Image (tube, rainbow, N blue to C red; front, top):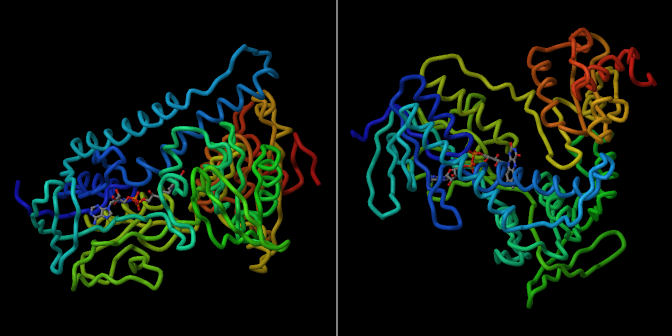
Length: 475
Ligand SMILES: Cc1cc2nc3c(=O)[nH]c(=O)nc-3n(C[C@H](O)[C@H](O)[C@H](O)COP(=O)(O)OP(=O)(O)OC[C@H]3O[C@@H](n4cnc5c(N)ncnc54)[C@H](O)[C@@H]3O)c2cc1C
């Protein structure tokens, strides 16, 4: 095979591999280079998301939620049983199996779309050349008309909390625990900290989450955040806000953490400590001298609205560029870039990026929070609908949480939708579609929703915006 390509993508995570597949669909000659290695030493496509992020975390969230529900909810359905146990090795085996199926699927997709998948480290050299170092140490250079950089992100580590991978761990290590820690500390009450804290809490750990910010989930609509805080507390997650960790040290089989809050200095002991304080763009060894690609002060590759870097015909997508670090945001950027390269239309609507926290209840939102709309000065109206009034949620024994819609007072445009409740991550898609098409609340009101479904909660919230809810009280 010749080493000249129309497109070379560096990184096969959820931003890079879709870019490569779409380039193949666009009849471009494309290669995708990736260096990911799993803890067993095996190479795999799929990046953080498939190997150590979205997919394994959701596999464990599902298993642990089933256990929790069996323990606490099945009796209400009239289902009882004798001896409920967790077989963690089997649970972790399933998690690994799900990951393996998904990552192997990328090999098949590459083949079907004529993408040359190459395992190894890629480095962009001047003149759109990509130097590839293979796992056996051999090197070769690929010539590319266009290069797409999709090198992703890695967890932020704290200098005063030295990572050892065993007691003081990151999110990846925390997905692969082989026993349930008795006392688990989590630094950071963000999405990843809350999801991992929930998994291990449900499986029996005492979980304490230390969050430096005084406000809980500041990026989430505060009606929803308050309800989430209440629900997590009921589940036994001990979330300490305004808790600034100053140091942590592992000794023997325990980790001692020092933190301060408004009450003073504290010291607390855990069996494991997860550091989940965010992620940073990863560009180590990616750019050779003179590549022409520039980084901003936080280490993100600088790009324009359409993901062009400062170097001609070099693009960058996903976690390594500005914007929310989410798999679906990276995917849309990857598709846009592959279409633009082929001379087609391509765009990403950054105003309607959905976010989901996969705890139970789930939290999902799109658009602006009520606080943000208030701050913008635009007159607005709000409708809410509680899942307690949803027949389907009740039938599922999941009548917790609510749906909330914020709309403009002048033209009725939907400005933001916020959900906490069962399957919120699935329900938000309707809101995303509505907002993509600049729907008004009335558009949702006049859209028929199947009965009995959870989606009716969105319909009722839309009706509630104009005080026309049928199944709930109009306040
Ligand atoms: C625990 C956890 C849970 C998450 N859950 C969700 C979720 O539910 N939903 C969601 O949307 N997001 C979630 N995320 C975030 C999501 O994983 C990222 O947003 C997403 O993976 C970013 O995709 P990417 O393609 O930009 O980068 P990555 O997935 O990080 O992939 C980058 C790839 O590039 C490779 N690479 C880097 N440099 C080179 C090089 N020089 N040569 C060759 N290869 C290179 C890396 O090895 C990697 O395989 C989660 C993250 C974590 C950690």
